[in-house]
Length: 166
Image (cartoon, rainbow, N blue to C red; front, side):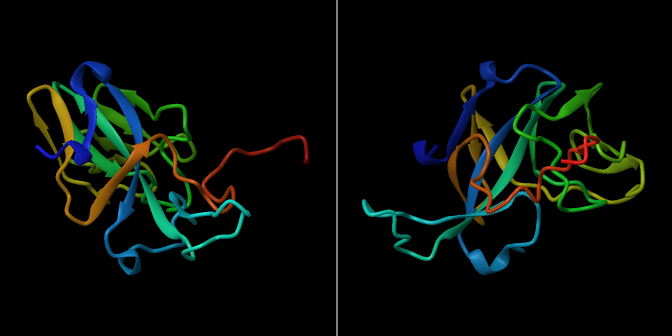
């Protein structure tokens, strides 16, 4: 497998856990900029000037359940500006990913929403493959950038409610 597409080792992913990764669409026009997990990451020169107008990044969550690994874009199907993993790991129980804002549950292997306001919807999948104990990006629509969150333009993907009024 291509080392540039290696995302993680299986032993770095416990069962019923997620790993947040950043991807870059090969064709930026194919990605909706308004989705909460997409940010713009411009190359900056030594003077702090953006040099290429920026390229879009997309987040995905890798999910390991029952020994299998699947990957999905990091947003709820109910409101696409709500991230499932807010940089601390998505909430996973019994092989299902939970939207912490709406309570929707998504099956780990398929991304199918079996409960909540978007019941019947399916998370957008990202193709990955496991080879010799490592997880690789197999989706030709994306390039692997890094582990961790994208560089978002704003906090649109942060759906926490501030009850203090600030």
